[in-house]
Image 1 (cartoon, helix red, strand yellow):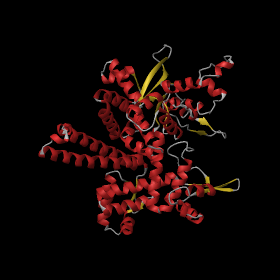
Image 2 (cartoon, one colour; image 1 turned 30 degrees about the horizontal axis):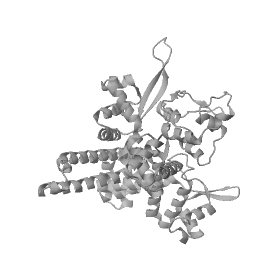
Image 3 (cartoon, one colour; image 1 turned 120 degrees about the vertical axis):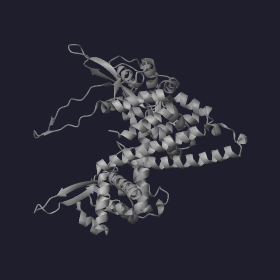
Image 4 (cartoon, helix red, strand yellow; image 1 turned 30 degrees about the vertical axis):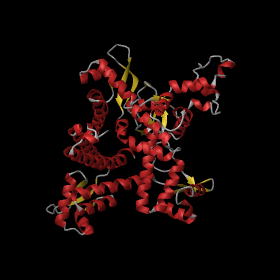
Length: 525
């Protein structure tokens, strides 16, 4: 469940991009969950035509997913199929990360790919024809054929994917317990209707990144794919000529009918890998960072989900080969790589008499989260509180007050004061241990709250991001007249206002970018 300030931040993003009316519909879905058109009309008091237009805008920009579900409409009445709409929180917040996504595309591919991706990020869903025409109108380097090749590169790197199914039918999973082989009942993980809808709407891996224009390049389809692509019904007798379809016609279908969108999941995976490598470089050194970067770069397309706990297993020969392809990797010997793997706490296993190595990514993320939480405590409560929090975070278990005072070398009186402050603000968990005789004061045990602390920190971060965004919008609105004036028409006072505005917005936007790195760390990684 998304924190309260996270929802408010998402609504602010929609307001700034699409206006108050669209934001009102989106806010209703974010706060109330999946709703039908009639439910949205009842809660927002808007006309159905207005709501439909707002939903079309949100769907076009990947902020809402529609799905169909069967519901009982009344006692003794046959169930009816209703269309429901759900807001996609992550996709909404990703709108603030377009600059980061474009930088990744430019870094890993080229400027043409960056230009093509920019169109998808700002317009949501486009056909290949629309993407190329827009890029050419923006004077992106290259002709139509070169731009089409760049688009193929984006798809092959999984930065672009086919759009999900517009309105999949969802059957809710039964809420029951399953029985294991030995007869012991274990509670089944019940997926929500929204999770089922997203799964049903997502095409298969092959379909998501399949380009019909690949036929032109000499990659023929197999029989099953041809049936699917050219809509030949199952069981229908196919004529020989039906499979001999003109290649140019097929490419035209691809460009004019199939909708594409940016694959946010792949960009988040890249950002997660970058965060892991940066954390390892700062803690363990350049060599360990290079080894981790090589491993993640090799296996990124094999990962099944963004939040993988461990990297994919690789042999030592493969790791060494990939390391030497990286900048500065040629100077690393086999012993250097082995030492780096040891530093990374590499998990190794034996399979078919060959050593395979895997790195715990979740542990790296947890270390980075602890570092971020410690820096927050340092800024908010001071250095002594930071030392106490760091001790408890590393210990991971309950610690008594006197022991904390002794280990941090802080006066007991000050230690108690700091501990109560952190406990009051939900950073610590406290337990009382009563011993006999009853007249003796109870012992107080303390520990870091863990998962609930991450949720608290994340909500505070969303609050800060919202405040920064609102302040930026306020500053721009206050000086909109100065912004509209051409530079040669500004007098001395107006030029000073413009310079002040530029400096203020630069500080605010830089702070928001740094804060977004922390938001990704706690929410997406």
